[in-house]
Length: 212
Image: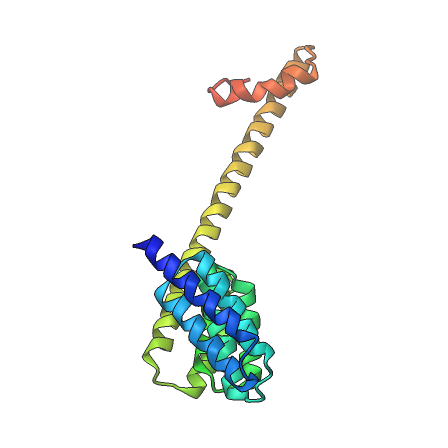
């Protein structure tokens, strides 16, 4: 059950945390990776994701002086941030991972997806383009490209629809203002003056089909 899993995970993490300060530094990164894998794969959920972030951060703090492994930990932490909806942090970790290992495809992939969720579609597609330079035939990267392009198309359609609605409202308002002007002109020709209140409420009459 979820409660049993939570208890089992907490006990495991408590033990690892205790040994973390006692073991030789050369083992610490391996412990961190083992722990975060246990948390992230077996016990998905926001509370466990936060623990996963903490343990990846511990691993990175050990300064392992291995660019490839450092990039892996950064990319894996980015994966957790992506699951949590921390898209800006995901991109930050991916950029740092790419700086360590420019051939890390997962960094480009996750940076692209996080960018898309931030509506930064061109930035996401740029990461995809960089990934395809490394592996032009990667099916997963091509699929992600199609998904981002679809997200961009849907986003643009929503923006266009919103602009159209706003334009319609503006045109209707302009038409009412023009009709108001015609009413005022007609009244003035009859030596009838109206106050601000009547002018402001005139639109209600006009929208119901009234004419000057």
